[in-house]
Length: 182
Image 1 (cartoon, rainbow, N blue to C red):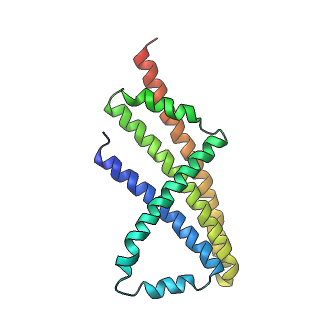
Image 2 (image 1 turned 60 degrees about the horizontal axis):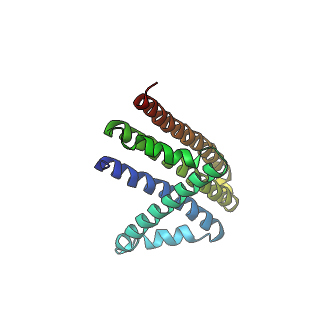
């Protein structure tokens, strides 16, 4: 059974990735509907805003996070950065090896998933910032700089996700070799 802190960490990671993607999508939409942010600002001042929007926004963020993380894992598998069979085999190999090793393995895999999903959210944010740059002349350099920065962070996030997957695989391989012996 997973500890409660790991469940909370998983929920917050997925929701953070989804919120990043959600903000990027709002920026993309605002590039085409230039009064969107003004309308959100207007409605956010009403007393029912928190009730009507807060819980659905969290639910949408969680769903977008799951979609982003799933899409990133599928992309990493498709371009053969990670091996789908190894993902399953490592999980099985570590499953009966004790709580400490299994917990650390799950943590590494969870971090890899959040980092990979975060790269999708950052990419969407980069697109939103770049599209918004064309509508906001006074903000153009800042928004284009933010888009480039988001792309750099997305690439770094993807590289770190791959590193975390590799660390989890090494943990499973070392633990399997230790248990099986020479």
